[in-house]
Length: 340
Image 1 (cartoon, rainbow, N blue to C red):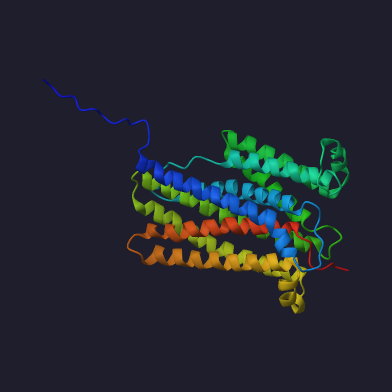
Image 2: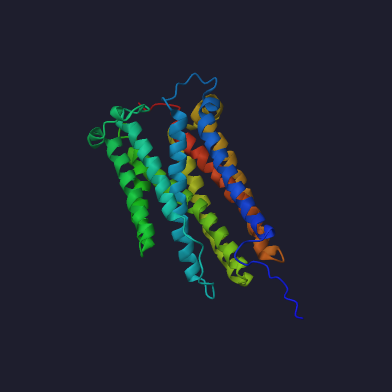
């Protein structure tokens, strides 16, 4: 008599295989929850004791801006890293599943929420009847809000098309609209401020979004048994680009801060104004990210397994997610001074 040994099912993941995926999903949910808490509770903490008054619904606006910035980072990083990967000789042809369409949907929702606030005179609408859609065409802020709504819609269509690289144009429109929105014509030197924000936001989106895409690509290549050489080369190529991005982010960030807070008042305003406190928190976080990036670069060059650098790189992308949340909060808080 022949004994037939039962075979294990192969269509489902084993408990051991499901555990890393569950941990990653839990980490993502925890990061999203932390970003939401920073956006919703951050304004009250930053404004406490400053004597400043925030706009109505500042927590919700900060949350929407955080979602908009995150939705910008994801597709920008995907386009950039996929282009880098194609330039690597011998790199596996596989790439992770794109999240660009989901990011565009999230960005569209956030842009619609921000446009509804502009349409009610920068007040939080409590009913659809309060939203004056036609009024958006009559103001500068309204026109920029419409540009962002349409740009994310077009970016989503491009992400679903056969030529996802076309997303670069609507995404560039979002960056330009944000740069113009952050610096109204009544400000001293608005074109200089918009130029600084344009470079700062572009480099920040590339830094955060590209690192996320690099880590997802490394996980895919390692999971399919591809040799570590291509993964280490991709991580090293990103590290070199990230060093330039960090330099540009630092330079434009310092310059923008000095335009908002004159040099002789910076130290005082970093602790006595809501904008200064949020900026100080962002500086600390960016410094932590820079240290993690340096740690990853050292492990990439000296460790026996270069891909062990993904450990500090994972921590770096988490802290970058917090930086995005603080950046969204920063844009919603009142400016520390007024230009005459």
